Image 1 (tube, rainbow over the protein chains, first blue to last red):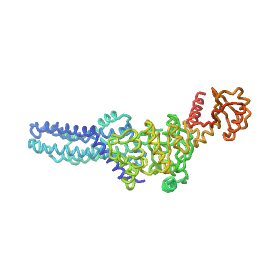
Image 2 (image 1 turned 90 degrees about the horizontal axis):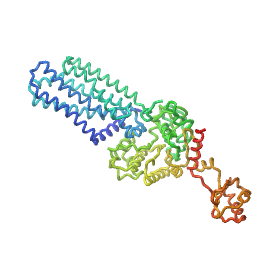
Image 3 (image 1 turned 180 degrees about the vertical axis):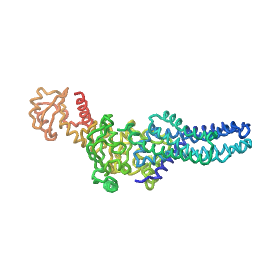
Amino acid sequence: MSFSWDRVGAILQKELRDYRRNRFVIASMATLPLIFVIVPVVQLLLLKVSAGSPKFDTRIGLSLLYMLIIPAIVPATLAAYSVVGEREQGTLEPILITPIRREEFLIGKALAILVPTLGIAYLVFGIFLGVVALFAQPGVESAVFEGSHLLVQLLFTPLLAGWSIWVGIAISARSADVRAAQQLGTLASLPPLGIVALMSFNVLTPTLGLALGLAAALLLLDVLGWRAVAAMFDRERLIAGVRP
Amino acid sequence: MPETRQTRATQTAQDVTSGGPATEAALVAEHLGKRFGSRVAFDDVSFQVGYGEVFGFLGPNGAGKTTTVRTLGTLLAPTSGSATVAGIPLSAGNGQAIRSRISIMPESPGLYLRLTVAENLECFARLYRLPDPRERIERALRAVTLTDRANDLCRSLSKGLRQRVALARALLNDPAVLFLDEPTSGLDPVASREVHELITALRDRGVTIFLTTHRLEEAERLCHRVAILNTTMRLVGSPDELRAQLFKESLEVRLRAQLADPGSVLGGVPGVESWEAKPPSSYLLTVPDPDAAAPGVARALVHAGADILSITQSRHSLEDVYLELVDEDVEAKRR
C-alpha cells in the first residue's frame, strides 16, 4: 500500500480540532507570542541611539531575534506532547492498529504543529513590522525593514520550526513522561537560534549568500531530523515500551 | 455473510507481498510465541478460528492474552511460530494489509475526548480510506445504538458509552476479524450487559470475533469455542468439550436422609464408576453416561428405602474448568 495524503489529512484535521478545544494549547500559543512581540516593540519604540552605532545594531538584532524565538519555542511543547501524550491518554494504540504508515502519522503530526506555528509567527512579525512602521523613529524603521533582516525572518521561520518539531517529536517518541518530554523539547529547540543570533547581531554579516547557505544547512538538519524520527518511530517500542 | 468475508480475505491474501496460500480459517496461529528479552509473554500458541466464529481467549492477568492480540494485530512481531490473519500471512511486510482487514478494540477505549463521537469516527474512517465514510459512520453508530449522540463530545460520555463508541470505531472498516480485548473491563453490570447484547448481535450477523476476557460467564454465553491461555495454551474447544476433557460426567443425588450403607446401594448400580458422599445427605456419582445410569440409580435407591429429593446431572461450569487448569499451573510452579 502506498503513502496516502488522505491519512495525513485525517491526522492533521484531528489534531487541529483537538488544539482548538484545548485551553492549554490556546493559552500557550497566544501567550508566548504576545510576550515575544511586546518586549521588542517596546525596546524599539524607546530606542534613541543613532543609527550605525554598535548598540543600535545590537538592539535591532535583539528585537528581531525575539521574532525568531517564536517558531522555535511555540512548536516545541506541542511536538514534545505529540507521541507520548497520545500514549498517556491511550489513543496511540487505536491509531497504530489502523493501516496508517509511520510516515503518514509523523507528517500529519508535524503539519498540525507547523501550520499554526507559521500562522502565529508571521502574524506576530507582521504586527511587529506594522507597529515599527507607524510608531518607531525613521532610522529604526529603515533598519528593521532592511532586506536582509526580512529575508532572515521569512526564511528561517519555517526552518527553525521544522527543527523544533522534529526534535520535539523524536524526544516524544522516546519519552515515558509528557512533562520531561516538553522540557527537553524546549531546550533542544534552541541551539539553531545561535546561528541566527550571530546574524541578527551582525557578528556574521548577513549577506544573501550566507543566509541562503545557513538556510540550506538548517534545511539539511530538518531532513536529517525527519529521517531520524521516522527511523526511531517503532510500533513495538511505543506499544510495549521495550524492543526485543 | 461469512462467505463474503472469506472471499474478500482470500482476494486480499493474493495481493500481499510474501505470498503463501490463503487459508479457509479467519485466523490461524501455529506455535506462535513472543518474548521480551528473557521474559516469555506467551509461547507455543496454536489455534484456528473459522469465519463467523466467536472465539474466546481466556486466561488470568499476565497470561499473555493482550500480547497475543497485539501480535496478531501486527503491533508486535512474533519471536517464534507463524500465523495467518484474515487470510494473510503474518509478516512485517504484510502489516499494513492485515491492519486494513481487521479491527482491534483495546481494553481502554482510547477516544479523543475533545472531539465529538462523529469526529472520532470520521478520523478513523479516513485512516481506513473508506469509500462513503458518512454512510459507514452512520451504520456503525446504528449498530451500537448511538446515532443520537453523534455530536456529543466524547468527554461527556459515560464509560459504557465510550466503550460503545470504541466498538463503533472497530466496526467502521467491516473487519474480517474483530478483536475485542476485555470489552467489559471496568464496566458496571448494566453497561456490561449492553456490550454483551452488541456482541451477540454481531455474532448473529456472522462477524468473526476474537474475544479476550477473564469473565468466564461472558465467554460461556458469547463464544462458540474458547481457548485457555496461561503463557502457554492449555486447552481449546467448546465449553462442553473442555468440560468433557477435564471432568467426568456425574449425577448428583439428594436424599432426605443419609444412606445407612451407601457402598452396598450405589456400588452395585450398573454404569456407576464411583461415588462420593456430600454431607449432609447427598452423593456425587461418576458415570460415563448420565442418561443410561439415572434409572438404575433411582431403582436402587427406592429399593433401599431412600426418600429421593432429586437426581440431577452435575454440570461443571467453565469457571470450574478454568480454575482446575490455573490451579494445576500454580501447583506445577510450586513443585
